[in-house]
Image (cartoon, rainbow, N blue to C red; front, side, top):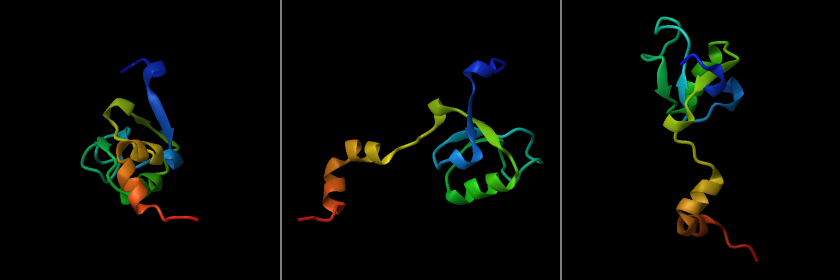
Length: 87
């Protein structure tokens, strides 16, 4: 992918579980078995932060990001059931 205008970058502090990222360098440059993968845990985010990178390239189309709003839209009955009643 040579067109940088079509590439998406995320600051290290903006990384979230579910983001599909592309790390620069081979597998010797970081402790992950692959350079391209979906973040599956907060521990992976901590490891990526420890690499000293300022940002990473990511693929929104390969990512599974959900916001609290998305969760309410997808499972409204579950959200209501777990919400405390306030009078």
